[in-house]
Length: 196
Image (tube, rainbow, N blue to C red; front, side, top):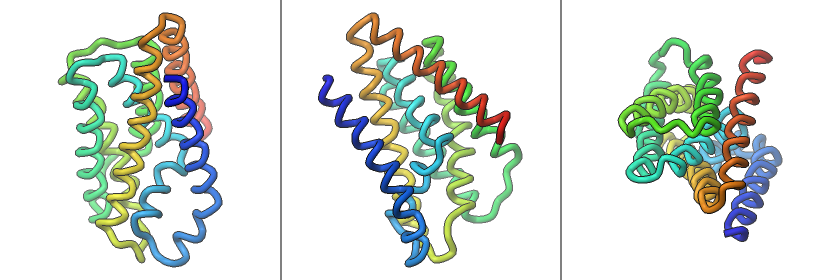
């Protein structure tokens, strides 16, 4: 289990470093799968919210293990389509900021909502995240590849959160640390909301 956590952490750091180092290169020669993949990983608000979905799904267990991440991916695709088509939605930036705070608090408080309520909440937040990704699609992009990239990155980040959550579930101290991580995500989201 420790090896999985270490490998996940190394992968996230590697992707974050690569996203920073290559961001201008992808935009220079066109935007496909790679640009789409690195777009959400390049924004701390997106990374924190998506990892929090995986953490919360792991805490809830049962059907939530697959339902929350899947709902997020589906609604993110819907939001991306709307954003790419130029359809305006209200309060998108506020929704993204709120997603980091609320999902972080859900992990911190180990909220045990019914799965349907969790689906509604994560779906609403995913719509906001997807809309931003779709609206920011570069003109040179291959839309299907770009969307596939940001959905793959989202699934990867959910998986990182899920793996961390499952590891934490095996030990009471780790479970407390996981809740502390949720609180840290919520605080970071609140700071980004105030500063941004």
